[in-house]
View 1 (cartoon, rainbow, N blue to C red):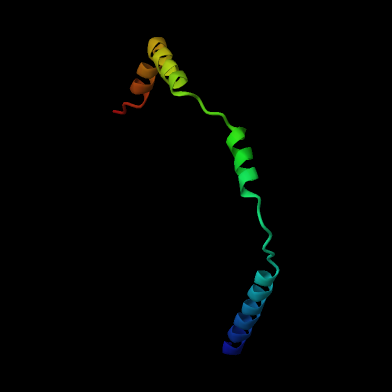
View 2 (cartoon, rainbow, N blue to C red):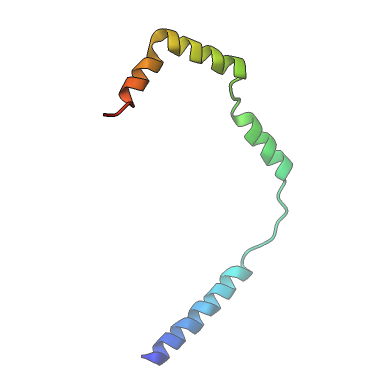
Length: 72
């Protein structure tokens, strides 16, 4: 039983070394990836968020959410 565990540990260790050796270190063009990620989602401005909040208060959406999440 112990010899099986030792053999398994040796095989697992050898496979880990092979898997690690297969990884290549290729340079990544980080600025280009960041530029793509930056332009993928354009967020709202502060003024747009404030306007949406005012509109939600006028429509009664804020009051409805407060009563919904009030608990009790």
